[in-house]
Image (cartoon, rainbow, N blue to C red; front, side, top):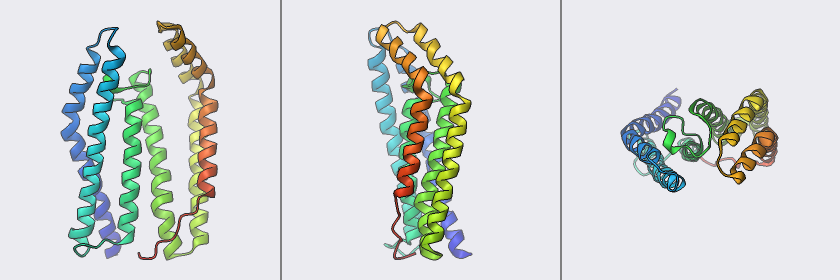
Length: 239
C-alpha cells in the first residue's frame, strides 16, 4: 500500500507541476499567438513559423521542468537522497517522452491559440485531433513503458506480453474507429481550405491530403501496432 501511495505521489507531483508551469507560461503563449496573427500576406508564413518555434521551446522547457520536479519528489521527498526506485524512473521517463510528444502535437494542432497552429484547420477540428492523439499517446506510452515492464518483473513476462498486445489492439481499434468516423468531415474541411487557398500548389496539396488522409492515418496506425508488437521491453533488475 505504501509503495502504491509513493508512486501516486510522484505521478501527482509531476502532473501538478506541469499544470502549474503551463498556467504560468500561458500569457507568453497568448502573446506569441497574437503577434503571429498580426501578419501581412508577405510575412504570414515567417511570423507563424517563428511564433510556433518560440512557443515550442517554451513548451519543452515547461515539460523538462515538470520532469525535474517529479525527479526531486521521487529522489528526495520519498526515496533516500540520491537514489530512485525503478518504477519511479519508468514513469518519469515515460512522462518526459509522452509530454514532449504532446508538445509536438500542440505545434500542429494548437486549439487554444490560433496563431500557433501549423495545420490549416479550424479550432474545433484542431482540438479534436489534439485530444485524440494525446489520449492515444498517453494510453500506449504509459501502458507499454510503465505498466508492461512492471508486470514483466513483478508477475511474469508472458503476462506482460499479453498486456502489451491487449493495449496495442485496443489502441488500434480506437484509432481506426476515430479515423473512419471523421474521414468525411476532415476531408470536407481540407477541401474547403483548398478552395480558399491562393497558391495552386497549396490547393493541390490540400486536395490530395483530403482524399488520402484517412488511408495514411490507418497505415501509420498499423505500422505503429506492428512495431510495438515486435518490440520487447527489457525487464528492470530493481523495482
